[in-house]
Amino acid sequence: MNKNLGWKVILTLAVIVVFIVGIFGIPSSFSGQGIVDSLKKQIRLGLDLKGGIHLILQVKVNEAVKVDSDNAAERIKDALRRRKISYTDVSQPDPVNHPETIVVKGVPPESSSDLRSIVQDSLSDYSMTSGPNDTYTVSMKPQSLKDLKDRAVDQAIDTISHRIDTLGVTSPTIQRHGLGDYQILVQLPGVDDLARVKEIIQSTAMLEIRQGLGGPYTSQQDALQQHNGLLPPDAMLLPGKSSSANGGEEWYLVSRMAPVTGRDLRDARPSTDENGQPSVSFTLTGEAGRRFAAFTSSHIGDNLAVVLDNRVQEVAVIRGQISDQGEISGHMTEQDAKDLSMILKSGALPAGMTYLEERTVGPSLGSDSIREGVTATVVGFLAVLIFMLVYYRGAGVNADVALILNLIILLGFMGYSGAVLTLPGIAGVILTVGMGVDSNVLIFERIREELRNGKTPPSAVDQGFSHAWTAIFDTHVTTIVSAAILFIFGTGPVKGFATTLTLGLLANLFTAVFVSRIIFDWVLSRKQRGEALSV
View (spheres, helix red, strand yellow):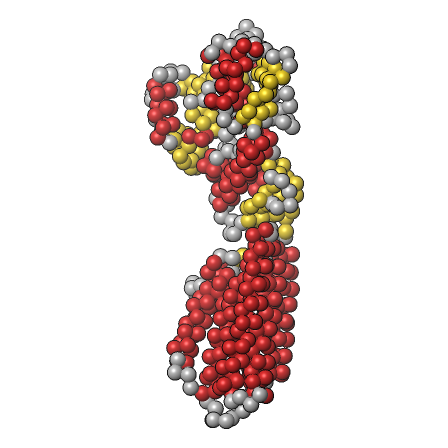
C-alpha cells in the first residue's frame, strides 16, 4: 500500500468540500429553496441563459476629434491675435468627415514662420503644410488621430461601465466589438427595460454653471429685441423650462465662460430640496471649489445659471460665497434624481453613439436554453458513465468518480471566479467531459497493455500512468492554448466557451491523473498479492 495514500485521500476530500462550497456558497437556509437560491447566486448566468439586453454601439469618434480640433483652432486664433498677426479665417473645411483638418487663410507670407512656430510649440499633435494664396493647412498627425479615436472608445467604455454598475447588473459585458471599427458590445443579463438603459447610456449630462446675464425671455426674438438686436460678445442664449404652471419654454442669456463644469465634480447624489422635492446635490473638487468661491464672492447679487446639456435647469441669485457644494432641483422625480446623479458621477461621454444592433432576450427563451443545455449535459454525462462501467468494469467506477469530481471542481471554479455560464459555456462543459474520458481511456489502455506484457497489477498501474502522462499533458496544454486565443479575441459567448473549457481541462489534469491514481492505489491495497485487476 502507498504510504502516502492517507494524506492524498484527505487532500482529495478537502478539495471536494472547498469546491462544493464554491458551487453552493453558504446557504441562508438548508431548505431546498435556500440551496437553490444560493446556487443561483454563485453560478452566474449569461445573457443567453438569463435573458437580458444585447447592444452594439458605434462611437462617433469624429465628434471627439472635432472637439480637439475646435480647441486647436481657438488656440491658433488666440496666438495670432497676441502676436498681432493678421488673418482672414481659421476654420475646418469638412468638420463632419475630416474634422482633424484646419485651414488658416490670409496670413502674410512673412508671418508664415510665426504660424509654424505656433503649431510646433502649442500643438504638438498637429503638423502644418503651406498652400497657394496665403493658405495653410494644419492637420492632426495620423498616429495622434488614431490614438485620439482609440481613447474616445476606451473612455466611452469606462463611462458606460460606471453607469451600468449603478444599475446593479450582475456580470455585464462591456467591451470593444471586434467585428467593426470603434464599436462597443454591451450585454446586460437580467435587464429588460431597454428604453431606460439606452437613455442612461447615451445621456451626456454635461453640467455647466454659468453666470446668468438676463431672462427669462419668451422667445429668442424677445431676447434680441431687448438687446437692440445684438447680443453681448461674451454671452449666449440657452433654452430652459418655464417655471410657470402652463410649462412651455423660456430663454436665458448666460455667459459663454463656465467657471465650473461637470469635469470638476467630485461626487453627485440624489437628495431633496428645501421644499421636499427630489434634487441632486453635488460636491466639487478642491481646485474647482476654490475657483467657484472666487467667482461667487465677486458676483454676489448676480444670477447663477445651472446648465445641463445646454439647457438651463435652474437660475438662482448668489447670496454669498459658495465653495464646494451645490444643488440641482426642479421638475424631476426620484428616479430622475437617481439617474442624473449617476450620470454626473460617471462623466460625459466623449462622443455621441448610434445603435447598430439592439436585441432583448426574453427570460423564457433563456429558461428553454438552460433546460435543453442541462438535459444535453446530463444525457451525455450519463451515457459516458454507463459506457465506462460496461467497457472497463471495475476501473470504470474509477473513471466515473473522477468525471463527477471534475464537474464539481469546474462549477466550483466558476463560483469562486465569478465566471459567467453561457450556452456555449455548457458546450464547453460537455467537451470537458469528453476530454476527461479521453484521459481515462489513455491511462486504462496503457495499464491493459502492461498487464498483457506480464507486469503485476501494481507495476502495470505505475507504468500506465507514467507513460500516459506525457500524452495527456500535451493534449491539455495545446487545447488550453487554443482556448486562450478564443478568450483573447472572441466576444462574450465565445469567451464563455473558452472559460469553461479551460477550467474544465485544469480540473481534469487533477482528477484524471491524481485522483484516479489514488483510487487505483486504494483498490490495490485491498487486493491479495497476485489478484487480478478489473480493467
